[in-house]
Image 1 (cartoon, rainbow, N blue to C red):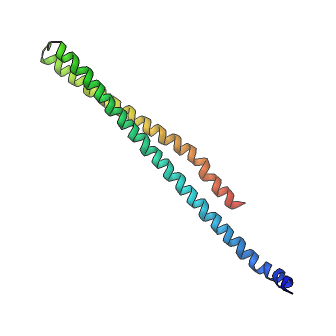
Image 2: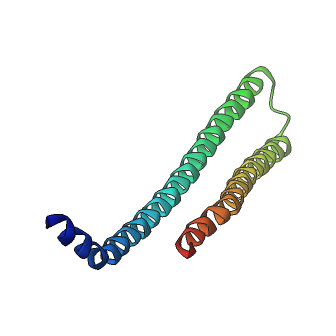
Image 3: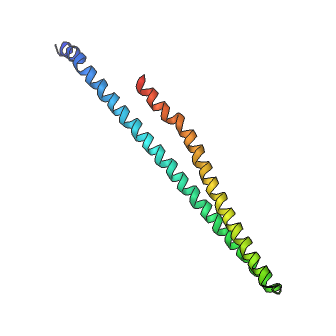
Length: 127
């Protein structure tokens, strides 16, 4: 008798179980998408920090290279010092621009790679 009661109760609980499973699947898909987005953001932040470290190291190297010749070589005059300062500033700005463009390039690549991933969860819901 219990077997008959179970089979009779299955059709009424079946759709609710399926609905719960679909809802949980949707929630999990949303959670995974959020985690993927956070992972991409963390990767971007790490890449930016790596670029900053690289820039600071380059500044240190440049400062060391420019300080040694100054001691060894007599000053050629105020014009040379001003030109040197302008060139160092231009170099620093160019390095910052390169770092910014690299970061933007990484972001574009990640955005392009994320587009198919965002389309896949939607396709799963349609099925």
